[in-house]
Length: 174
Image 1 (cartoon, rainbow, N blue to C red):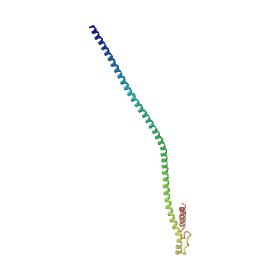
Image 2 (image 1 turned 180 degrees about the horizontal axis):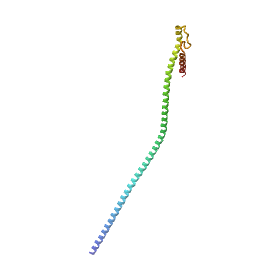
Image 3 (image 1 turned 90 degrees about the vertical axis):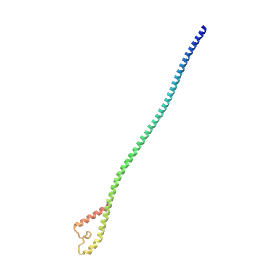
Image 4 (image 1 turned 45 degrees about the vertical axis):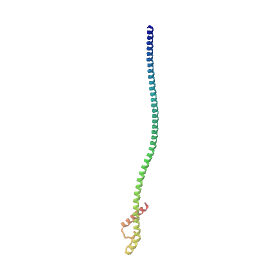
């Protein structure tokens, strides 16, 4: 029995060793699983960091593109500002010239009216000087004919006719 007891004791020791070995192996497996999970989590984190890095680089590139666009826009605004200033100056100049043109048209209209008046006035005096001597000479051959358009008149009439004739000259000089 002793032999049988020794064998059973040896078997129990083997079983215990196997149990200890199994527990150790299980712990090792669990440790490896944890390590593998940590590695997987680490790989996932690395992949996430790579994706974040790519996104950051793309974002940086987009910011540089936006910066370039704003610089181009600033250049265009500056160039357009000069053009707008030029347009504004041209509009102001045109406004002044239109006002001057309007004033010249008003003056031309008054000159036109005064020229018509002078033409009518001149025609009247020409006709008067042509036909008046015939009427006067027929009506009063005894009266002394005054040298001022063959009318017998006072000095006031002569002065008035002289003044009208000088105005007539001024009409044609303009």
